[in-house]
Length: 112
Length: 116
Image (cartoon, rainbow over all chains, first blue to last red; front, side):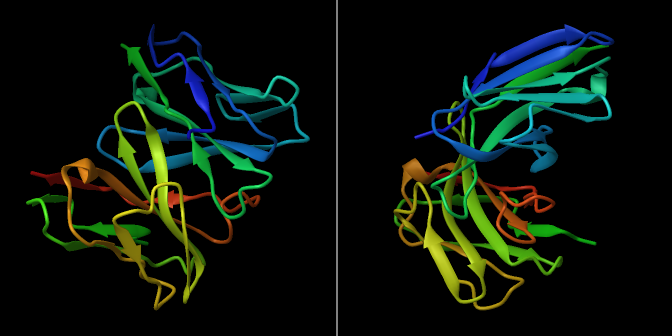
């Protein structure tokens, strides 16, 4: 079964607006990662946040993690048409050993 | 660098046929894995390997075999293809286990498989 559930499933915004995607998970984790997937391509790693961190930034990306609520959010600021992609969270569960579990993804469309 | 290379890009099989999806990486990564991606279900782990000679099952291993005779290669074998195996298959590798800091997964561009 999937560890992560993402919300919304699809998001459409205008260029320049901010995009927020959410991920909820079920079990205790060591860390949570976000990946991006452009159409027809493989996933690309964006950012990792550890379970003892609450917020992390990378360029226009801001990730938060609330382990008490078992949830994370990815904020993309000042979005661009090139940000159009699917975004996935992936969790490293404490009991999973050597595996990541991916959510179902959020499809983001940024309209020029 | 080529990164993670998957072949073929597209494949059509008939039910009952077998085939091997190839995956090679040139980053000297110890960890390699296979995922399948289906609409509405995200990515599900099929098999993974933490080093040459070591493989283990993921979430959905039935109908698939893997081997890891070298660090670079991690082929996925479909033993007797079924329509339920129609999917997009991704190979991914990382320096060490993918939850470790500075060891993100690197993905190939996928193999789109259709079983009729």
